[in-house]
Amino acid sequence: MKVTLCGTRGSLANAGPQTVRYGGNTACVEVRGEDGTVLVLDAGTGIRALGERLVGASRIDLLLTHLHMDHIVGLGFFKPLFKPDMDVHIWGPPSATLDMRHRLARYLSPPLFPVLIRDLPCRLTLHDVARERFAIGGFEIMADLVCHPGPTVGYRISERGVALAYLPDHEPALATGKVPTDADWTSGFALADDANVLIHDAQYSDAEYGDHAGWGHSSVSHAIDFACAAGVKHLVTFHHDPSHDDDALDRIIEEAREGGEAVRRERITQAEADAAEIRQRAQEDARLAVERAEAELRRRVAEFSVDMAEKIVERNLDRETQIALIENYINSVGNGSRT
Ligand SMILES: [Zn+2]
Ligand SMILES: [Zn+2]
Image 1 (cartoon, rainbow, N blue to C red):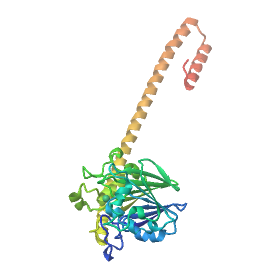
Image 2: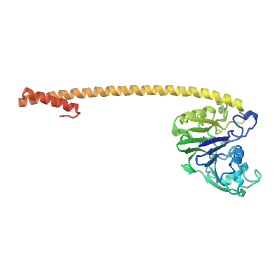
Image 3: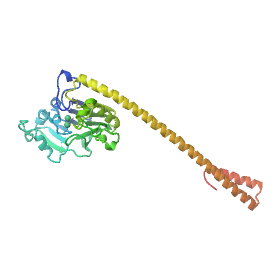
Image 4: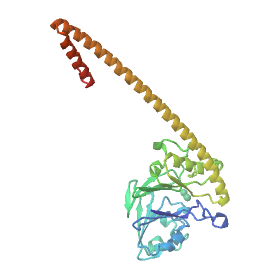
């Protein structure tokens, strides 16, 4: 799987020398499978240049997380949609009110855009994503609703045991201001669980989040906490606020990384304390087990001595027979059975 970030900005494009390192185009990611399958995640302004490179493909699957403008504004400028021999499948979250075609038509129709969606020359198929696994080419894909205003999904894309999670607009810290640690209570957890790469919303600095709680986005620290909780191997911060230039992003990410290091160290210390407690409990259990075994042995020896004394008296056994009986008993105790 090869992943290329074509647009990393959130909300509104901000292209120019001040965003040249982190990127100024809005959300768009190209994912190529080993068998040549092409997935495009979201259709922000980054999709225009990507479309130039994809005109030679025969099928493209475009996976939309939701229909906010920063994720669909590039659609009208995506060249494959204007090629008659091209199969384009657009996948997106279901809505209780309007189907995908009618929702996209609100943008792809005058006065906002001159071309109607029904007049696009490509062979276009629209799909509501189900909240279950489905396949596109060699990819296995899982979609699930995540915490963001309006119907919004995140995606987990797997190929040969490697998983990419894509949650560009996501606020798992809504309500408490902190990312929960319990998997069952964390939006998007199953999508990101143990993923190799997580592309995640990181719109705000910690200081900015307070004024934007409930807007559907995360701070960089939230993205780090969410990635740590889900056991992600590599986090890619994404959906950067248009007001953050490259230098501001360097600063915000460095601050969050230092905070993340402290959290990580704290977690390691806690894990070590937990391990020490488990070791101590195991030693105590072992000591009690030895004590129980010794008591049982003492009881059995006493029982045997009483039995033996009775037999000796009853049958008037000679010394050799007494010794043989005792040896026989000792052997049976060694074999774990009782006489
Ligand atoms: Zn967005
Ligand atoms: Zn959004």
